[in-house]
Length: 195
Image (cartoon, rainbow, N blue to C red; front, side):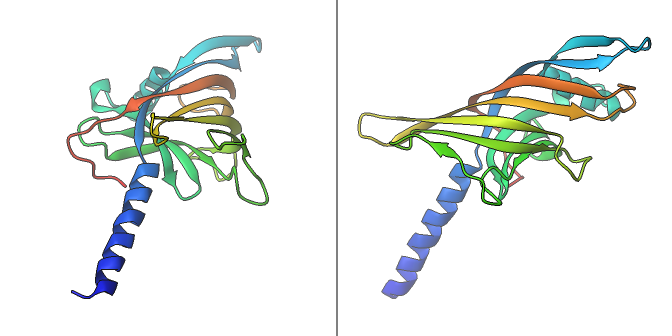
């Protein structure tokens, strides 16, 4: 084996390792509030959590067993940004792309980074699978923690999200929603079939 093949294999391995590191799947929590109008045309509010999203997806799709669904946050899950997906809880395969956070650093936009690069804030646009246009925005905050040797060992992500949802079979009126998304531990699956 010549030296060029060895170098090519090493570079490819580093590249693939870097890509997979950026597409990690995380558990998360979402706490928020939604507003809509009732039959009398008055504003009403209601709490929203990550479970609310799962329950609504299940009801709209005739799924009775919520244990057949899980939600994950995939940091760097798309070339355009991060994604929130409904996945199979056994193997992590994507069932439905719920939200996408795109274009925070596209079209001459830039993220805000502190002097040592350990904190990043960026404004992303929120997209859903149902719409070809943005339905809101999310302010994503990333904090990188380091071990004693200066190696990055954890990325903490929090996001303030504002979005709207168009009427559907469960909600006859437009919904305006606001809340906070906080990343937890890495999601673990027996076998991962999705990228």
